[in-house]
Image 1 (cartoon, rainbow, N blue to C red):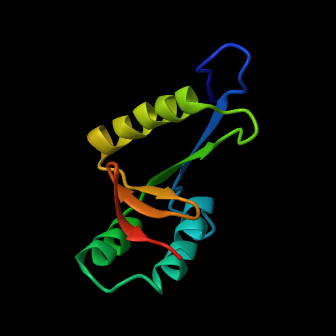
Image 2: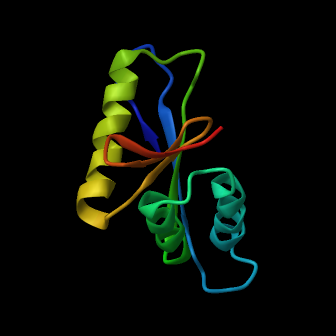
Image 3: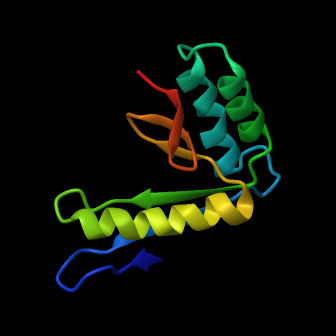
Length: 111
């Protein structure tokens, strides 16, 4: 699935992966990698909340940004999609190279 946000711009690709409940579920495998990211984060309530949230995660929405062909309007469009999942599903956002967000607030920064 993709988000077409502007003519002549590559769409932002979205992939939804659901936890199948099977031990080899791709969602479970991906989630099991996240605690490694948290190892160096400060031990505080935000880190504990993120760790708990990850244990209860049932699906992952991955956004693939066309990094060579995205502009501010693309980031705004993706922000609206992510806001929907935060508001309606209690989602947290993990941004590669940045950290974990609750809404638009960075709560656990990753090195």
